Image (cartoon, rainbow, N blue to C red):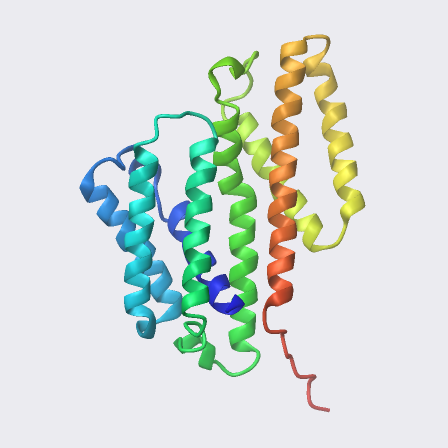
Length: 244
């Protein structure tokens, strides 16, 4: 079941955060764009699970589009609709993995000789986790900090905040995978020192930076720990030692 869920999750991450362009997001109310996105959702999952999973994956793609339609009808701003949308997608992936746990075992990739199938699954989870920590986190934190009363008090470099966020979340994700939890505290302290001269005594700037930093670090830590836990449930990498 966990192997099927891991493949479905990776396919979802690729469909929503790699192959879905900014133009598709902006014009998602157009039926043609929704259908295209649904086709991408199906295609990414099909590429990982193969023709034996065609009917379940078609149902998943329809459910994905239905969830997106519901989100489009929600007028609320901020990160809430985004998190609810992704939560609903996650539930649909879990349900499909529970109802059809053998999808991965029936895929062409599962027939790869050891350690091929396990290595592919582990790689998919690692890549998907990194994308969630960095790119998906950028959307979530950006929406959170775009609240009407939370406009950035000062101007900086174009895309500077976004790039800093991507870098810090990527570093935290890699540090968690490496088990270097103490280094995360060092990273937080280093950023605090670097930001000290910027925020000064301006309470609005200070609170804006603190909220954004804690949200960004928290998202990356959650993505990293979630990735580690999912990796632990997958089939181990049975790599044979080299012949003498």
